[in-house]
Image (tube, rainbow, N blue to C red):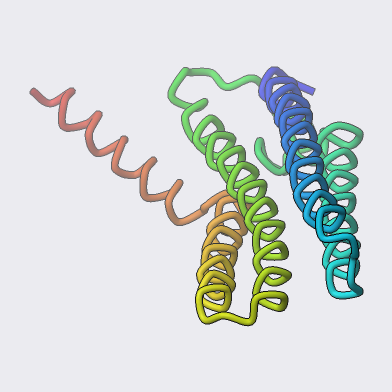
Length: 185
């Protein structure tokens, strides 16, 4: 394991801890909103209970996946970011670190977008509950609005978690061109 693997594994651990804490915060917030509205009305209907259980299962599975892939098995994340070599030597020049650093930053941004998609899905679950209870056009509009937000965040997160290969190749190529242009002047 070289320096790039170690840095990627440390970044994965830090990101994992951040995502777990954020997911716990979103879980506690959504549970308190749902339970306080249910207790104030004096009853909790089955639709609310199904939404609470679904939100709870999604959040717990997200926390479990984050713990497993980023903290417990951070070496998988490090190999994905750094590359597939058995034992890569340390890069000879600082410019060789650029694609690695860019992939690492893009993948961390992907996890942050995934966290935003998960929190948006919990808000979507709350608005679905609101739409069923109020049966108004405003509630249905908010359900569609948060549904579109969720799909956009999820699509961006998936692309970034794949390492944004087209973006990284384009950025590295443009950086090399820019460096050659400056060296010619």
